[in-house]
Image (cartoon, rainbow, N blue to C red; front, side):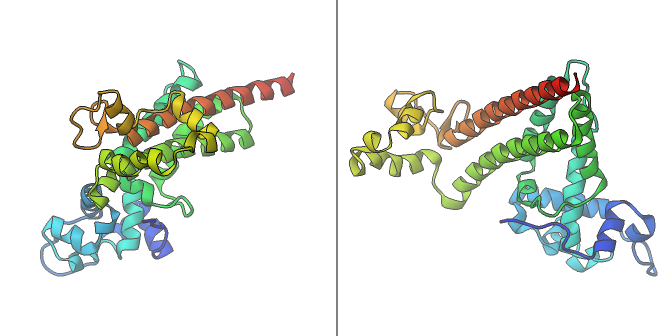
Length: 285
């Protein structure tokens, strides 16, 4: 499922995101103050999404996690739409605010990408929040500022920096999204990856006996260093006991392929940035 941020009341959301005290404070009521706050509610919502996914997120589910009714939350957060914005921005606070560039921009960008990869695998629901409508919160801007701080030392112009940001973000989000979907597929379908491969790819030699002749380049690509599938591992006698459908320490074929795409794609983007730096320097001479 795809969730679009910024669907709630614009001013109320922005007030909450940027910590305006008059907006974040509960409405005055007689009696003792309840032991809730915007921060407590948002943390509970993140815990729900981490454990059960975005589909399980509701004001009721968050209230139950806190031992409260959904109605008790509305004093602090107007509704689910605003809650999604707050969750998204608050989770981003986990990421570093800056990166050391003394070892060079390339090493710093690798560190940035690795942090993003690990972050998305901790919070896969973040990948379901569409990038089409940014939250415009302080931590979202902070993450961008940290990346721009690294790219600032490359000497690229604004256009080149924008391209680099887009390419780097696509590599990290795309590869991490594949891992998240691979893990979700097992839960949603009840089939391990090994079972899926056995039922589908295992039938190819019978249903498509001329596969290699019909798709020679696909056959070449599969034969030249592709990540090992459960089927090829079984043929090599290396499948072992993989109840989760994978090998290599429990990682599935698709997860290993995604990690390879992450590392290889990142290297290609970094090479492209290096080439762009050289072109920029040549134009200035």
